Length: 421
Image (tube, rainbow, N blue to C red; front, side, top):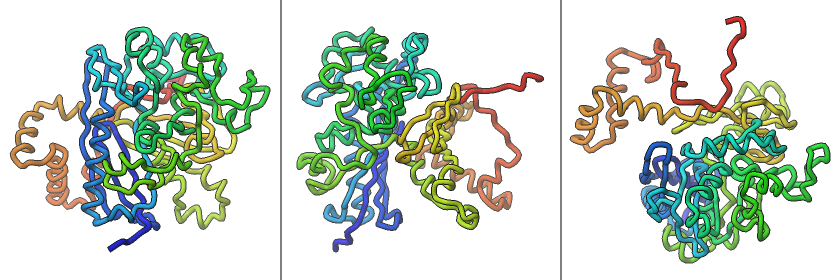
């Protein structure tokens, strides 16, 4: 029986692809996940777009089955993903970004730090665009990674037709429309959204000619060829998140996903920022009683999104330049608001590191395998048992006297010490 009005969200994180189905009121009807592969070799961390797409298809089909949602029930689809860099050729086939030459490995994962030297050289130029990303690019952003590929993998560099953020690639794979998102391009590609949308001022140093790409910047850093041909390789068209793409799902991708051709697909978001939209749109009781306008309320909230990394995000009507803190990014999360973003590069990844290097790790892994569960499911069972035995009012009370300083693995925000200390 058709229920209608179901929305599908697909989120590709660092370790898995997840699909969630929601009704018109936002109630979760069902979800499923599928693991994705990763290759790690020193500072190089890579994935496969083909592997990720297969995981997305598996998660979507499983979620629809578990929730008893028919293809005709799904009225819209949106993608969110990590800000990883995808390389494909003119046919959409993967192009290797790996020293190994393995064509499957066509994604440089967001947390890959191979391009530290390239980031330092870009930042040394002090381009005006850098003031819009905290004063300098991070090796986690795309310009340094692109420069690394050009300098180290010339054959791959010459083969690539499109360089895309992973969430944009997913939307392109689904619809054939390679329109990029303001979220991805502004946050990770130095795209100046306020210039694109007519918010540029002459005092901002350069006349952008109603285009958010600073072509002088790309030429200065040695990547001028990326702005040739109306910037076809990095984005000819950029739109607000949620903008309808093409004619929706193509017949081929609809069949792969188990959905109907033409199902609407919106322009994507970075995964953390997709979570941020939901938090920003929530209205706590205290705020509703304070008689704040929507504009005042939304500027008084901070989003904390946790996963492999952690992002702290806040929005404002005026741009804020804070050295070492990413942004201000115009309309990158909430339309016509400036986003400021900090956080820590490794949080969930730290848990993995601690678990894997603990003396009890082999025993834990064996026990989990014998029970056919993941080590995290097993640990959650142990924590629930401990909480019950100690009569704790809730699970997290187990850690009420435990304090962790997890910055030994890097952070995104500046650490400011008291000069008197």
